[in-house]
Length: 445
Image (cartoon, rainbow, N blue to C red; front, side, top):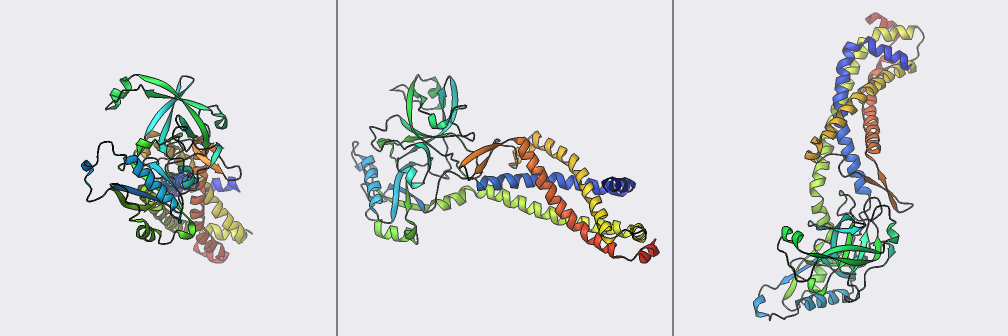
């Protein structure tokens, strides 16, 4: 049957050429769109590594009527921050609370990277200063070990590590056996004002002990996993400009929590010159953080919907016209003993083969456009940030996906989507043609 369908396509090659061109163009565009949607959907389903349900960020700043200059130079501002944190932990509706640098809080817009050394090789990582309670607030799961010590004296040069997409911190080394890292730091007494001065300043190698290893963490659903190092926030790191208080609220108390909390704790949280200025659900920060990427997804969905509707209508009209033009041939086949089912299979098989033939050059065109880098500039490339990750819920692990695997999956998604639309557009004309009586069909001929 396949051989016969190929002969039919060749016999009608003049009219089929335009259909093939249409299928090639649509298949190429849909290849980009379906690939983008597949990658984003898969990323959306991957674990971010933190649990933000019932969590909030609190920001404190100097009160409206406070003059900072009235406080002596040796005033202990960090102690006020510690007092605020203790009062937050005492509030019955709060399950856990912690300090966090604003770049360490989930869905933060800021990011700081640095590097560590192993066997003379530098590995980049994301730097996140946090309080030990951070891991309880965001329910970060440990693969091995534990958080750094609560006591600032004992936690000196302690760190918690999170791996990259290959599930290792250092390549070819099991992350659960990771004991220490070497971090290059400035020699005491140097305070560079810019990046150039920092690079020229003398440095020393400091050994940091890895107390624990946590699961992989992403800044957001649509970003890749990166190596992350959680450093203990020092007492003097407290600064209202870049320090956030993160809290996890008990689920049963998370109804109108903000209003109740402000009413009951507003005055108690006025410590020294500081007062509560904002309290924001991290779910809202997540919505704002993902807004730009969500806009791209919505745009692609509109393009895909428009394409599929037009392809359906175009295929429906084209094949209805072609089928009506071939009523004589169909009537002759019926008169020679072909059943209605065989007629429909023949017409649908011809369409399937045309789509298969069109998909080959379409994929080649799409891959060349993808590799040219045009799509990267538009922010819709599917090969950016490979390796992509596949989360295995049973083994609680992540496996890597190669670009070849991704392109193959994308091809099959595009092909099946096009096949469904083309089949729907061909089925009705094929059914109408197979229902025509042979005598009537031959009369048209």
